Image (cartoon, rainbow, N blue to C red):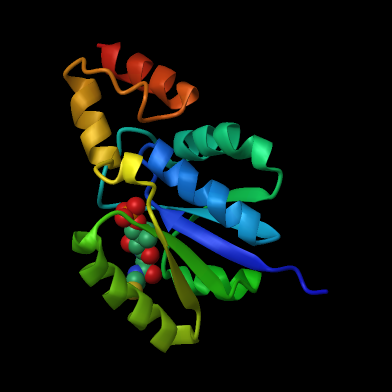
Length: 161
Ligand code: PNS
């Protein structure tokens, strides 16, 4: 039987409970889930790509079938190189849909890769890495929005001079 693979792509700066929920659900549907962390040289993140990968590995270790890697360039090339036929994305609200649909259609047109949309758990429908960083920067409590390891990493990064 061929191994059924999917990819969950993103910036993950840092991973939130919303991302983790989608990865968890994808890991129940597929044999192997690749988490692809995009390298964006034109955008300085709060965490380096290696730090993001390290955090994602820590919090997905328990799933047992998740592989975390960096990528740059086109997502469809990442998929082609690893024989991945499906992209799994969370949809938080209708506002996500327009751009996500464009990307899904472009990716399908480029290489035939399919995109599967998973409705985000309503608990996380307002959640984004940017908002988490903003709230944490001003001392707000984000402990219910991110895994513990991320909460600690945020506290350490944002309190250092
Ligand atoms: O977490 P993000 O920043 O919303 O993730 C966006 C991401 C990485 C999924 C998207 O920008 C992407 O797929 N980038 C890779 C480059 C690419 O393939 N672009 C064409 C998309 S149609």
